[in-house]
Length: 183
Image (cartoon, rainbow, N blue to C red; front, top):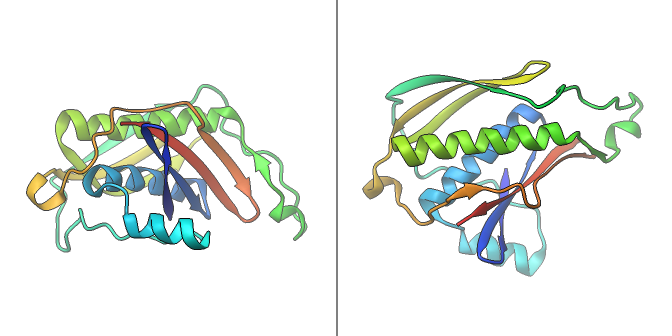
């Protein structure tokens, strides 16, 4: 699940997920959705009016029955150890807010930059992800299909994933990330 927020001339997303693997997957889907659809004005209005939780978005850029044209294995090395902080086992401790190491922020940046490159340079859209973390790297297998601007749309050009304001945290029982894109 992700929500869109505006930032000066840029745009960003806040992503919430139960696991880090799902967080990275949802962040990539959020970025691709922005590229293909642009921000959802109805979601913006709903968020601004009622301050409700972000709605889960559909993926209209992934038509039913669309089949991947290729699969690709990706490995991205981390700048340090990907160990999670020690989190207590009591019910109260499982809902503590914990800021993760900046290594996770760097890895999220590099992951999204890789997905953006595949889209921008090769005109391929990820349709499925299998993401795993080792002690020092992200390993992913992504299924891709050709981008078709007539069917997929093309609302926003994202030039880069920025480091400005990037965050990866554990809040309560979920992981939360914020990413700002240069448009």
